[in-house]
Structure formats: structure tokens, C-alpha cells
Length: 322
Image (cartoon, rainbow, N blue to C red; front, top):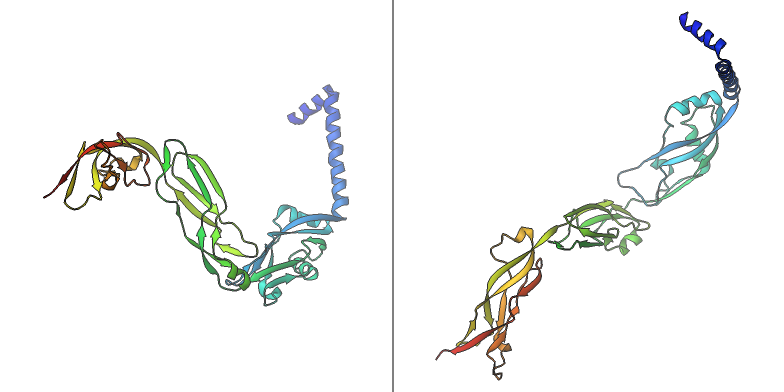
């Protein structure tokens, strides 16, 4: 009682509050009348109906099946409460009911409406359906195994480099289509990818580029591109002589040379850098008064960059055995 007494006191003290409350009361009464009028009349409503097709395991659809159907219906207003507070019913079609047995799954407008009506309230009237009909191509041929190639460009940041080949989770995929299309497909590519300024190993899931009129499984492939930081290294290596004739000995002064290069961090602990420095006996110009010969870089591991020798020539002496 005290609560209502306080409300009455406020209403008497504040005409503004009394006006607001009266307005809300009239709105509430109007809403009740509108509800009675609406719920007893036919109302039009759009619903999104999920669509599923039960298919054999060996069948693959070659054109896209819509995930949902846009259905416009009319019914008594009060019956729409079931659509407002519950999920729309799912329409499930049997593949065998609408397959032509060759390569087409087809449901015309009349049959589509009939199937939709079977999952709706019996009093509901279907006004329209989008799409109006289904016409889906399919194949039941076995998949063709074809090589998968990556279409990717990778660039690392300065002082970083790719160390090793790109690795992909699988090197082939299965392609499903009609016989003519399958005969023309001999390889499949990933979607084009460009990545730059890398400072760490790249791991990414990449989609496979679609082929019109065909289905590819799987739809994605995982790739890994190893990226490592480069560090400048210096080593002293022996100079080897090549192509010297039998019985001829070529003495070099000095007999070793310092080499500098940039190497991935994981290769720093290697005892053998894998880099060689060579002097080619056939390149010696014996007619020249100089007794110097050019020193060249021989083998270089692909992961090394900016390989340089401390000097490009050495002195030599030729010794011949008797």
C-alpha cells in the first residue's frame, strides 16, 4: 500500500509524470488492439529455409547448390509465432527422387513448392520461392589424381632468407568432373599468393584455385616456407688446384684464402661451410711475366649469400717431377 500511495502522491504533485503514464497506458491498449487485429488476419512473411540433399558417397555436385531457400508465405498472424521463436524447418531432398540418372539433379517449381509445403504448417500458403527451381549438374565418375603446384611468391626482409624448399602438406589432389573435362586437366594450382617482408617461417593454409565444371578435393592445402635470419661469417679455406697435368705440382703462396658470406643461423655450427676456392691450371698465362694466377669461388651452397674472397689472386711456382 505504501508503494501505491507514493505513486499517487507523485501523480498529484507532477502533471508531467501523469501525462507520461497516461500516454503509455494508451500505447499499451493500442498495441493490444493491433495484436488482435493482426493475429486474426493473414500476414505475409519471408523465411530462410535451410536446404539439404541426401546423396550417395560417389556423387559430387558440379554446380553450386544453394544453402537456403527464400520462401515467402502467408498465414494467420498468430501462427507466425512458431517462425519467430523457432528455427525455420530444414528442407531435405532425396537425390534419387530428382536425379535423371545421367548428370542432372532437377527439381521444378511445382515439386519444389510441394516439398516445402510438406515441412510447413498445413495452413500456410506459399507465395513464392527463390530460386524458383533447382538444376544442378553432378558426376558419379571416380576422381582423377593430378599434381598440385603452388603459385606463391615469397620475399624476406633484408638480412633474412628462405632456407630450404617450400613444403606442402600434399603434392596431389582428386578432381571430379565429366569425362571430357577430366581428360583436359593434368595439373592443379593453388590460388596466387604473394607474401613479403618475412622474418620468420611462413605457415599458411592456401585455397586451391577453382576449375569451372569441376570439384577439387581437398579445397585447401597447408604450405610452409622456412625463413631464417642471415649472419655474416668468415672462414679460412684451402685453395685447391684443378686440371694440373700428371707429374706437375703447382705451389701456391698463400695456399689459403679467407672467405666471407652470409649464412642462415642454423648453419653457423657447421664445421664445413661447403665453400671451395680453386685455381685452374689451364687458366695460367705462362707467357705473362707475372707469376700470379686468379683464384675463383668453386662450389657454393644455395643457402649462402654474398660470398666474397679476401683476395682474387695468388702467386705460384710450378714443380715438375723427373
